[in-house]
Amino acid sequence: MLRRTVLLGLLAAALIPASAHAGVVATHIGDFDSPTYIVSPPGDTHRVLIVEQTGVVRLIKDGVLQSAPFLDISGDITGPSHYPPDPEQGLLSIAFPPDYATTHRFYAYYTDTNCPSEPGCDNVLAEFDATSDDVADPTPHVLIDMPHPTYVNHNGGQLDFGPDGMLYISTGDGGGGNDPAQNAQKTTNLLGKILRIDPEATSYTIPAGNPFPGAVDCHTGDNGGSTCPEIWSYGLRNPWRFSFDSATGDMIIGDVGQTRDEELDFAHPGQDVGANWGWPCYEGFELNAARPAAECSPLPAPVVNPVLAYPHPINCAGGPFCGRGIIGGYVMHDPSLPSLNGYYVYGDLSNARLRVALLSQPATLSDADLGPQVPNLSSFGLDASGHLWAADINGPVYRIDPAPPAPPPPPAPPRDTTPARLKITRSRNQHVLRTHYVKITVVPNELATIVARGTVSIPKSARVYRLHSTSNKMRANRRVTLHLRITRRTLSRIRHALRHRKFLTARITVTSKDASRNLSKPKHTTVRLVR
Image 1 (tube, one colour):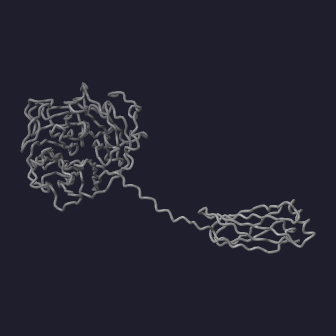
Image 2 (tube, one colour):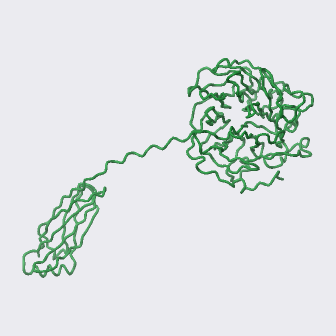
Image 3 (cartoon, helix red, strand yellow):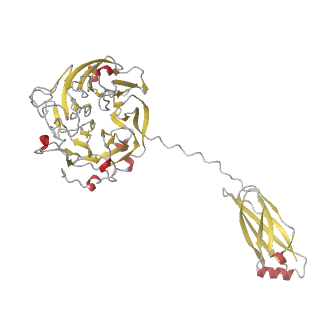
């Protein structure tokens, strides 16, 4: 049963023009320790920060990787090496508020070392203070501590300040299959949600406009069964990455699927406040066959549909793209890539091909390969110049750049303006009555096409008889004999004339054209025709 009817023709209604993704490359910037995110402070075009899952934030300053980390909280997190190891735990993202240059406060989201129901560990939102532009104090001021018992996966992990200046936070449903803790559809906990808060020094408030105001906040987990006012939207499985379009304020959420589909959720500013995105009752566009009855009977309504979904490989059936873990990206506004302006770039952890889409409602208008590939994509990020970056969880970090211009063609060699030189030899007396042709030998000094023409004048005759011309393509310094055939009629005239004289004279003209199409001046020689 479909949530809605989606025709394939609608998804491909508008093809992305080739210019939108032509000439795009992934420039390798460096290698890091399990990079999970890339970000710059607002307006700071000198610094790019690489978040490592192990709890370290590395600083690239004016294109140079600094030896000292910007932040090191490796002792405060449960990382991917925790037993049992899981790639979803660790330091997952950081975010800088619009007033960072004044306050020097920033925020981090990570799994901490409090694991009362191991292997699951609490998800923490903490505030930190930068002591300088290049170094931060590693002392955390915890704002939200979300219990995440039993399972290591589905921690969410994205922080981003929206166009309204508020901090948005993505959280996973708590892990396991089909939301066994029944978190995603409940508004009484913070798991499986997008949260929205107004952070202050070591605390936060609930901003006006949140859909569930009035209750006590849930900064330490369930507040006793009341609705959590931090919630902005819910019904998500593992919204690992979301972003805002810097031009329009649109919110795009990449929600990682379970066994069938990966999906993109999309909302204009102020739209779908308090939205239910459907998990675990729906996956992609379809009902989840294994949906838990406690959450999905009756089915929740209304539910907001995704604008794009693609299948897992087992259901791909030759489709244009499939994968197992969507990595949400960004709408492009990079001045160095104007052909991509307004297009959304995203990818998948298990499929190296980056994708570019034109997002719209109720469905994405077009979706195609971008060109560059990142084999183990973990995250995208934007720097302050609008450049898109991409991280491979195995270490490499890339920046998406315009392809360098093609090198100019090699200069053409100087044109040869000198025609071939010809060496011509011939037998002075030739017995043409026996051979029926006149022959000459030609040797050119370069590759050339040789043309020989000849005439015979018979005394007391008003006519000049032509010999059949001949041509040949000749290699340099190779001797070639050319034969100028005598027609039967001309041969009869020559035979008759030779009854009364010892010889007749044939005049031969030879020309050449070399590989550069240079024509030689005609060269002349004579041959005596005898009996």
